[in-house]
Image (cartoon, rainbow, N blue to C red):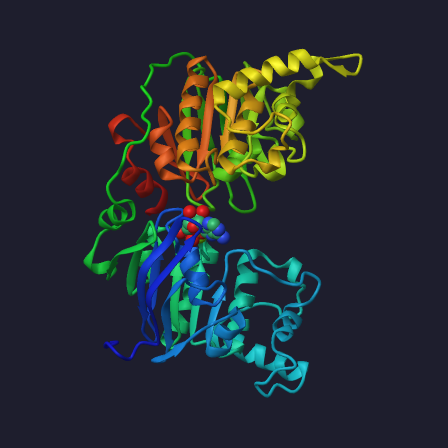
Length: 500
Ligand SMILES: Nc1ncnc2c1ncn2[C@@H]1O[C@H](COP(=O)(O)OP(=O)(O)O)[C@@H](O)[C@H]1O
Ligand SMILES: [Mg+2]
């Protein structure tokens, strides 16, 4: 049992702002030798920022860190690693065409730790793998490995550096059940050997299976620090959410008739693996699909936009039943207006002016003999800019210069310019300021009221329970349940999305 004063690691009063936004406020944290702590919190709570600060990726504005009771300042991840603190980020960097052994060797040689040759490092890597029961082929090429195995390579690299504390940022988000079990087995063995572990999660089941303590971050504040046995998932969820606030609540309308969009038993192999996902959206209805990262919600959205071709099953749309879409073009032809999560990559042409972005999807009908009917284009874009209340200096201003919220409004405007009957939105307000967010939510309600069948795919729980008429929750590739009316609360949604 750890007593005050002999922590392996201690952070005091960490504060961090980006511009006017306070991301972390005076966060304290301790970790004992061989202890495992879970850090949980909603999207945007500041978990990754915290992990990056304690591992030297970014600097705090104020606050101190101590390792082994000695104050430390990390100016780069390599400082942290040299002190014995390793970070396994969610997005792993690796050299694809080298072997596992070479990747492990890469960070070590020539090293100060007395390694003399790649051969000896390789032998040592094998020792480490054996000692911790990690089983993989050191001669495999990195790009042949699954994500789970690449994470293990990172862990082996950390152990080769004799890491005494490992920070993992949502390590299981993209792992299947068995891979997660393997990972936790290894982490437990590390614990037994005295390594301290901080892992970030938003899965309640993991917290209960693995951690000695759970810390909860909410809006950059540590609001709880408790032993799992002394609390309940309900209580932890309540800490994550605080007071539920209502921002925009849609009046629920009764819908009848067969679904305008129906997904029939979608499956996929690979990760996440969808299993028998069926759902329907009626004309005039907004349905939400909510899941945490790795739940499969993203894949469903992308497949509806024609961006994922790995899904089998059928879709009925406009009365016709067919295979899932093979391309964005295919989805568009079927009448689906799709608002992608990656608006910079898939949605907008940042160099083009506002007006042209809005009317891009309409250009074919607006142009005759290769010329765009400028008057018609202006009329349509003026109308949408007014309806969407886009703030800008001139319609000829390139979209890339606008704020995230205004870009998102233009993206939405461009998708509804053609008055679609089916609208699918993927993370419609990610990275959007609060004001624009409420406006976008109101706009969605207006679009649905005009009869559009609307599916909102989101990992933002507040959005999930305020915007849709009913909410479908997906977990581990399966539909975990459906909420509507008074049962559609953040606590119920998170509970369905994260508990066994
Ligand atoms: N480099 C950055 N610049 C501005 N804001 C940022 C930056 N990184 C994160 N944020 C903001 O800080 C908040 C917390 O983000 P993050 O630490 O990634 O949360 P979590 O990991 O809990 O989801 C979010 O609102 C995010 O938009
Ligand atoms: Mg994060």
